[in-house]
Image 1: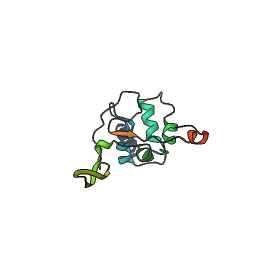
Image 2 (image 1 turned 120 degrees about the vertical axis):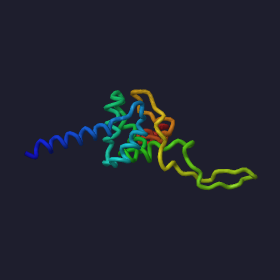
Image 3 (image 1 turned 180 degrees about the vertical axis):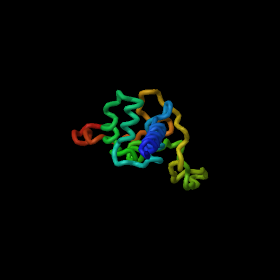
Length: 147
């Protein structure tokens, strides 16, 4: 007797999760990861990045390798090692006077990211709110090539 209600409730929860996990129109990978990791947490893998790729950019078959090579071995590491908020969004923490001019000494990233500025469909690149952090890949370090 409880099974139909339980099955209906589980179906409803699954539908809600699918809606929450769906990339928004023209949302970039970094904004998507920032949004879903904040709600669902990191699972220690690239499951949300893979989901984004499957739904938005299925031709980006090397996405996980590219993210891993940049230090993003899980979804939260992508946001700390492979991408960072764009410099124009950082807030100054300390200012000093240098030769009579106010100069920023230290800055911090925004506490909350602004809405995604959008990317074309099929792209895994970040929007203007993010910078890719260029890091030499392990292949380049191993074989003496520039990354």
